[in-house]
Length: 379
Image 1 (cartoon, rainbow, N blue to C red):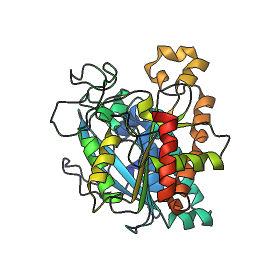
Image 2 (image 1 turned 90 degrees about the horizontal axis):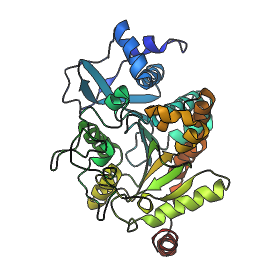
Image 3 (image 1 turned 60 degrees about the vertical axis):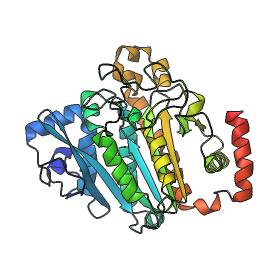
Image 4 (image 1 turned 180 degrees about the vertical axis):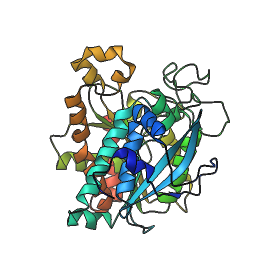
């Protein structure tokens, strides 16, 4: 296919293999849309068209799956996973996700932009191709397509996907914001007690079980926006103030990052020092993985990149008048700056995962790093 082919034409020509998990849809693949549908998606969910363009243009480099087909009124919106790199089940893996909260579109845009950079570099960068052959990269850039379509935090059922896992905070949470069961008419709704997780989270869980279980090293990075004026790298737990069991691994990663890039812009810390919440999906995944002693990765680290959108509001207070402006840069030059701002970090996560044996702590270092974490965050 000509690389100059339009997004609209590319997405009409998708040739995908449906995943085993498409158990709710009669939609056949490849996906075909008429011009009116293309126009509507371009208005409501342009990130989907951009992702589909990448899929269509790089069939030899990536594998795309529709993990679930979400129904919204008369629309069928695909939930994609994209895999690049090694197919060796013992290769280290990096999972990158975004768009869990539909209004936080910038996370999906940053991740799709980085995917585009990787795919273009792999056409000419022999070093990157060699690196990719030794690691598996898994992307789910649009976890909540209905929420993004509607430009709201929750999914189509009115449920906050990051308050939806079956795990409860061990201490008091913020009113409403920490998750509640009052109903979908209020934000941060967890869903009904004892109900299964939402289809988007179940699809994410299947991808993680399929792509992460059994590997010696795996790292997950979930992209968000909306907290504070600085970019932060958060790690679990969100449901308790006690340090996570493998906190020494997180401290070792933090120190590696700071030694390598001492002039970095991020605050690296546990989420729990700011607030607790019910139903955090990454707490849930961490705990279920560690309960599967026969299948768990030897090392599994999950991180959240929380882009500090208050800084964008501070520079342009008019964004307060626009709900989306609370979570996304509105000025063109600022948007472009954010798209390139995190490339170094994402490249680092890839390299650090592949080379984990050079920085993960041994038994002695684990004790020292755990003490350091207690002094830094939990004393």
